[in-house]
Length: 323
Ligand SMILES: Cc1cc2nc3c(=O)[nH]c(=O)nc-3n(C[C@H](O)[C@H](O)[C@H](O)COP(=O)(O)OP(=O)(O)OC[C@H]3O[C@@H](n4cnc5c(N)ncnc54)[C@H](O)[C@@H]3O)c2cc1C
Ligand code: SF4
Image (cartoon, rainbow, N blue to C red; front, top):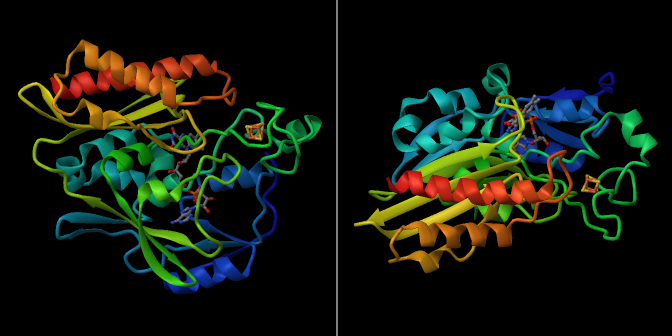
């Protein structure tokens, strides 16, 4: 860990003002700081300006709006875990939040910070001396990737736990920038590039997440595999949304984290509609997962293990939700 570099801390009172600050200076949003400050201390970022949104009205609110619930991006993970409405309507969100970091992190860490968390790699999440002695890497300050030296793409893994749950819940984001506000499906926030996995334009920020109320009979869950039993990022994390009728699939959505440079919504699950949710279907589901995830050598755990564990968790969770 290094000493923190000099920076100034700004407290805009509106999102428009925050967007201007982000556009006009070398600035980053500071939410709970549990991801960002760790990176700054390791010399992975040195923003001259940190922009806190805590004075922006509504940034920490949870509000029911017709057929959806709007979560301000500043809602903390502890609040997601403790809120009675979340427990009743979106228990999988709390289920994922409680697996993130430790209790003191969760008391300040936010929904927006989790969605916009930087990608991770064993060659990147190291101190400055370690990285310098390895010639850095192309995600930051270097020009080769130690994971896939022949290519010019960074494969650092997106490892936030909330995104896959919000993918299968078909959440939308409210994004605010210098040009105003826009809404987009959560999947549009990401691209498969570990060096630049967010699609936000300069000056844009995530203001809120809108989660539609679930259809009757739809069940959701989240499971993750990690090296330690607590305070650890997912080697693979899986969210499933499942609706069945008389043992047959009406709707099945699966999303994953920890395996790719961005969260992944599994393709091909529509084909299971109308089929019995039996062991043959679960085997097919595992094959889909194995085919679509692409874990690389970005953790100390073997890539193939992460592929197998992602498939096994998906099938197990689907079976559990069907029971
Ligand atoms: C020991 C430890 C263990 C951890 N384990 C996990 C884990 O198991 N799972 C997991 O998912 N995470 C884990 N984390 C990472 C982190 O704690 C969480 O992801 C947390 O939710 C990040 O939220 P934050 O509010 O602290 O974000 P910050 O650190 O404040 O911000 C993270 C990034 O998002 C940007 N940002 C923040 N808010 C917005 C916004 N509204 N719009 C646009 N950009 C924004 C920031 O500029 C920064 O780049 C761990 C961290 C530590 C230190
Ligand atoms: S995947 Fe390659 S470029 Fe990306 S952080 Fe790891 S070593 Fe660096």
